[in-house]
Length: 246
Picture (cartoon, rainbow, N blue to C red):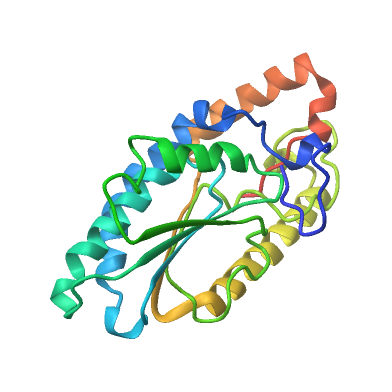
C-alpha cells in the first residue's frame, strides 16, 4: 500500500483504508506493538525539558489510522507528562494531541473513538486538546520547533508512492533484483523525507519514538505460505499489494 503526497481521490481504493471502523476492528496485531512502546514512551517523556517547550506540550501521533491503537500510547504519554510537570516546577501544562494520516483516512471513526471511547486519553482529563491533520508523514506537517513528543507505530511501511508494479508477487522481498532495487530506493527516499521533516518539527529537547515491524525466520516462512496462498486465489493481487523491502 502507498501513501500519496499528491491529491488523492477517495474513490481510489488502493490509497485509503476501509471506513466504518474496519481498521479499528481488525488491527489487533498492530496494537500489540504498543505493549513494546509503553515503557519507551515513559523514558522518552522523562528526557524532555519541560522548561524549554513553552506554554503547550505538543504531541504528534504520526499515522493514527482510525484512532483505537493510539489511545493507550497517548494516555501513557499524558500520564507521564502530568507526573513530570511538578518536578519541573510546573503545576499544570496544556497538552495538545494531533493525529495525522492521509486525507482519505476514516476521520469520522477517529474522532468518535477519541471523543467517546471510555478508554480515550481524554476521559477524566482537562487541558488536553485533540486535533487532526490529513497530511502525509512524508511532508512537513507542523511548523518548526512545534512538537515535544512524536509517536509513530507500524506506519513507515506505507510508502509515499508506488514506484513500479511487482510482477507475479505480493511481497517486494520476493521481487526480481531490478524491481526490488526500485522499491528499496523509494523506501530510502521516503525514510529520508520522514526524518528530515520530523527534525524540523521537533523542539530542541523533543523526543521521537518510532515502533516498526521486522521479520525473523519464522515470519519469513509464514510470509511465503501467505504469498503462495494469495497467488493461487488471485494472480492479480500481485499488482496491488506492496511492502518496503527489508
